[in-house]
Length: 223
Picture 1 (cartoon, rainbow, N blue to C red):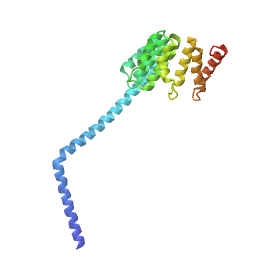
Picture 2: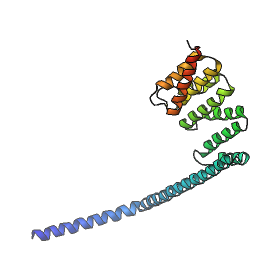
Picture 3: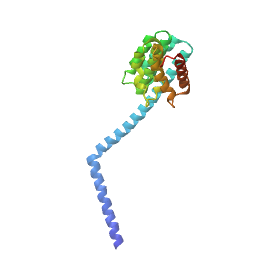
Picture 4: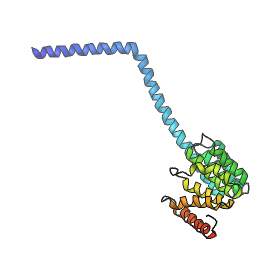
């Protein structure tokens, strides 16, 4: 008898749940279908966007490599044209990379002032990732060592010459070279000594710094 009662109760519960589901579907079926459609469309859109992004990045990467190949083959004008096109139509970080590489070619062609201006503009552009802005500062500073003043070099990179910055070694080198060129041996020695004392300084850069420290010491002008 108990088993019959349990069976009857289950049937009643099943019927009630069925009625409740029909009621819910009658009231909210349209909404449920709409939500399901939106989920499907959203998934399709996401997959499509990811495919477009990967395809665009791959295409820009191929174009960047092709432009680099032209530059290495000394086809400077063709390389500049390719970089300029990529700067306008490229995807992701490639437009900025193309702009920086074009500026390097510009400097090689003799337009150092124009190249410095490009690097300085990139360094001030907050839409560019910080790492790329810092790299542009370094490139501008190295060019300014030959053509500018210590103050101009300092304005570009002294903020990078701090212990926590990954580009501090190059920043210190440009500052030391600029001071050396200006005849300020005490200041040059200070920057080169920071490179020599930093255990994380790249070996080639540390060797250059030590060589210049030896020259400054031999000159007797850093006292």
